[in-house]
Image 1 (cartoon, rainbow, N blue to C red):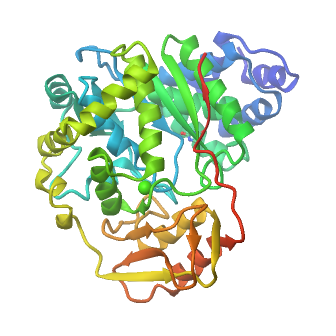
Image 2 (image 1 turned 180 degrees about the vertical axis):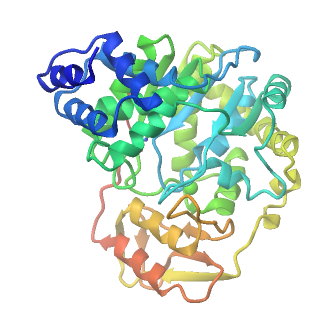
Length: 433
Ligand code: URA
Ligand code: CA
């Protein structure tokens, strides 16, 4: 087999065989195929696309390029949730203890945040002592005993994806449905998921800016998952404005605790219920979505979800008393209000710009090497559709420095106040096989 023939075949719009796709992925991972040939193929795929079978083959070739986590020692259906990334997206922090409280195993491998989106591990580290450096044995033991544990990225997972993603980043080939779908699904499958619930975000703060693009990506991922024997479904949810009110690590932990108490923001709570119900059904703990939702509401009401969060934090070295005393979480030195300069209705809050404002405060990383400040961030007080009078606080800046002029300017730029507003739908649609 020759790489040049595979490139030419895809360039001409023909279908690649399973063997040709594996030849490319293996050869590229091992360094036998140079970057220039891999770039040419990525560009050919960008223009010519791949059919469902090719997409599944690409995904599995990337899964098999490195370690595959074996979760078979954990009893029950391992359902993983994946979000394509957003601003102030606190859902994982709430969902993990919530579904674990229903005896559904949550064996989560998580990452850190980069750019304007946050990472679950960073958020959890706002709880003093909490850490994800646990052994694989301990991880499995904790999930079997308490149904929940989070571990940092271990092993050499999907090296093909790492290499190809870096190449796509500099060759204008990131934005290709078969390549994104294969990239995301290969990581979930390598991490050991039996079933996958995808939260595909759409809007300014998301990777996919339009609903049509989000649906296309979600459909591609759902088909790949089901093609390779992983029950997969997707919820398309809004990320035109940030989710919930809190953006920033400690602030989001506090918001998660409130949501687990049943006192969380309406949008965050609703998204958690939608995603959680799907997870409960995929884990075969309920026959229908309404039944699943009732079970989730019950563990919030009776305190089991919150108790599970305490156990989870304590199991991994965290100070669980923070759940009842959130004032113990890292606190920023300064609180600065951002008053509305005009009266009207909030018409737009550009999520990614607000995410950048939080990053400027130190809540996120511009590069992988950056340190983050767990205490800082933004607490929004108004969401799209809310009325404001002149001088009403739109949000509070939690900062560890006094001069926040650039952050303030960014925030004013990203919030529009008008005569009327169209409130975006939180859940656009649900994609099943
Ligand atoms: N996120 C991923 O993990 N992979 C992509 O290709 C794009 C976004
Ligand atoms: Ca939030």
